[in-house]
Image 1: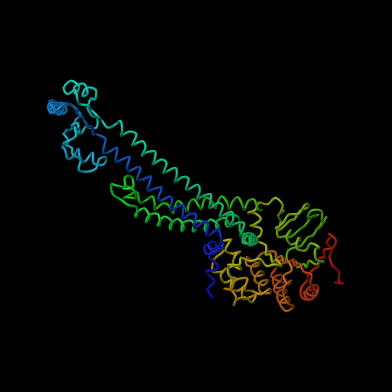
Image 2: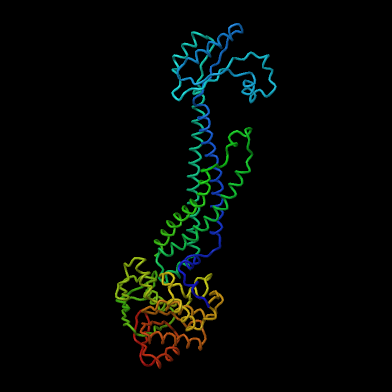
Length: 295
Length: 225
């Protein structure tokens, strides 16, 4: 008879709390569901963050000049604007958008096949700027003098609220993750308290044989941590698959960035570990409080 | 070793003891007897620190029990072996795991302890049931398993509450022999029982004193027992 396994401290610590029951299911399911929600929230927060960064990167350092004038002076004003821009410090390059590019810009609102030649559209000049950008006031004054129909647009007016909105969405996502962690902690605290009450006989026997509170707490912490990690692992896996199956493509807008890339994968991988840490902390506090109050 | 000084215990309006004093020296063997409800189990529970008296003091292994922290009580219990009438076990652990619990919770898991566990299971005649679960044991087997668990850490004191309460005469004698054997190894034994035949059987083989609880007081029983 091999009795070594009966004597292993870790083996006993592992097995002393019953492996099944209502609290086991509660811990497993709640940590699984919370991990699933956490992965989804993470993906949304990351997508919002990526979107904000992309918008910022794409629009920073660019500007547009819009020229609205009568047909007889439109070309002359366009030439004057291009000349002025080429002589302005802080402007890297400037070019007039051709008809196909203007069609592409209008397509999301009016669809394809737009009869552009029948519409009276302003001329658009795309500008690439240095990091410091041009002297805006000076440029606007020169444009007003040489091309009265030209309006300089730095994109900042509509870029800032978009970037701010995406940033807030990301912050909300992180706050939701915090709430998920809190709810997970509360659920596991409830499960651990219930388990301690349901296993009063186990606690009695352990005390009778001289187990200290720390040892009993350790047994419950181990059991609940393992359950929470297992549940969270399953929830994370399902969450990752669900995120991967989300439709992609430009038509889906924000959803096109949903998912994890490169170093971002560390976050879903951390979800089961954080769930385990939360479970360990919650069980430790709950068991400690219960055992102290039941001398 | 065990000293009760003017101990009083009451439950609500009912006073069980009002002024019980008792000294059990090291290596002694005492039976505790008395009618049902006289307080035998309560006295064992006082000695095993499972409850506190309403007044008076309990001294165990040279320490006053009242005011001890939970961890100190646990440390003291590691020097006590307790066998309850209802033989409480952790039902999803095997008999061997239950018997080994005192060693596991104190981190004593070496080869010597492994050998000791094997010896203990053989000593109480449960080597063949080591892998069984406690609910699969008979009443006598449960009492013997509880006894093996109680002496796993070679305690200084053994407290047994009706250890033969649920078993037949042959098994009672077997358990009594185990208690006598422990006493001969120098352990202090306090055994609560209502079985006078068992006490008579023991008195012919070991120098045991008999304490009788009656009417809230404790007295040494005479030869007419």
